Amino acid sequence: MSDILANILLKKYQEKSLASLYLITYDPDVINPETWVLQFCKNFTPLTDHPDILKVHKDEKSNDYKVDSMAIKGFLKFINYRPLKLEKKFIFLFDAEDLSVIVSNKLLKVFEELGSDYCLMLMAPDNASLLPTVLSRAVKLKIASDKGMALLNEINFNDIKTPQDFIASLKRASDLGANYEKKFIESIIEQKLKAAASKAFSVIELEEFLVALKNYETTKAFNNAQISRIASVFR
Image (cartoon, rainbow, N blue to C red):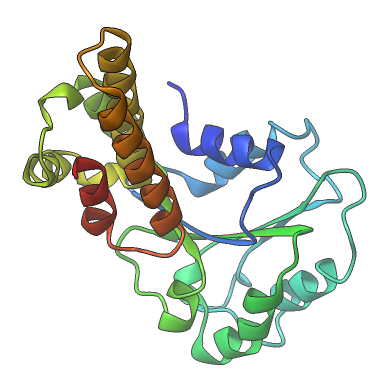
């Protein structure tokens, strides 16, 4: 089954619009993050040890990341150099929920100042407790399970007419995260274009929708309240 999140990130990479810091969450009972990262990296290279890709793991005998650990030292060294072959250097830090307060504070400046040459993806299970300093600086995305993707294909977005309808439908697909929102917006755009083509939608109404869509795209980058963002396309 197609991995929507991987496709979104790949498209952003091609468009040179990837963010520098992502928090990627997943259902640990369904998704193996190591496998997901391996498959995602195949979009860029068949190599498992590409010089522009780094996978960061805790030391085997540690419950959390240590400032003086080889993992953190290796990460800090890795970001001292520009990409060799890819457009960006990719860093996948597993078990991000185990970043201690001390390590997070040390990396805070790194998180804030990662340049366009780097893309750091913090991997963590759903509902994991992460420090506010991490949560506030990362773009949050979710890997949808096959079960979730099947549910996504079953939903009839044409039945969603109000923000209340969206809230009700979202409860059925709570584990889809950004994938659900993306699919919904695509459905809204398709509906409006069909209506405009059949002249069931006036030019003024179409212009108003395009303004609402532009506002949605603008607020998406700054507003983490999903319902608040979505409400704008119903106005």
